[in-house]
Image 1 (cartoon, rainbow, N blue to C red):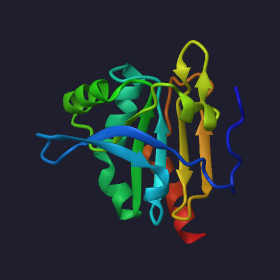
Image 2 (cartoon, rainbow, N blue to C red; image 1 turned 90 degrees about the vertical axis):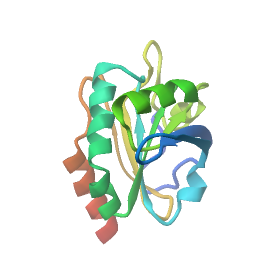
Image 3 (tube, rainbow, N blue to C red; image 1 turned 60 degrees about the vertical axis):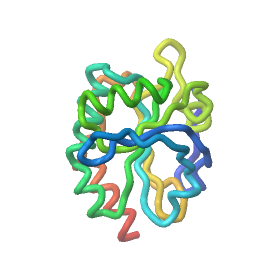
Image 4 (cartoon, rainbow, N blue to C red; image 1 turned 45 degrees about the horizontal axis):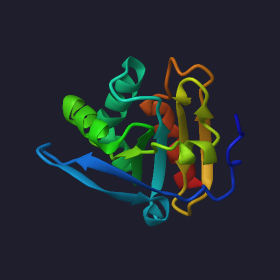
Length: 163
């Protein structure tokens, strides 16, 4: 597994297809998501192995229910996995997920961030990118049976905003 980008360096740029469930949840708005277009706000990139799997569902539901916390810290959350946009739409609708879900079907972005893994496809990982596009914090799970909590991410984001 590649190490991925070091802290304090610009996060690797990318553009991926994805979509987000509109509020109140009747439309799944599809589009392309470019990291460079997110500049000016902190960004949480949550890489996860798969839609509709137990731990991934718990993780993304936790982040989705905490969207007000992220918004209060002027941060966005993007979920990234190897499934396609159709799978993401079904997953978002099933659980009312309120963050964009991006499709990295070729795992090129996972490779760029050092989280592509044989067998499982993608390691569970979270990268926090500052408003300036610089990687400020990361956690890459070895096994992926647990995930970084909303409070841990909020604490780390608070540190980014005060730095």
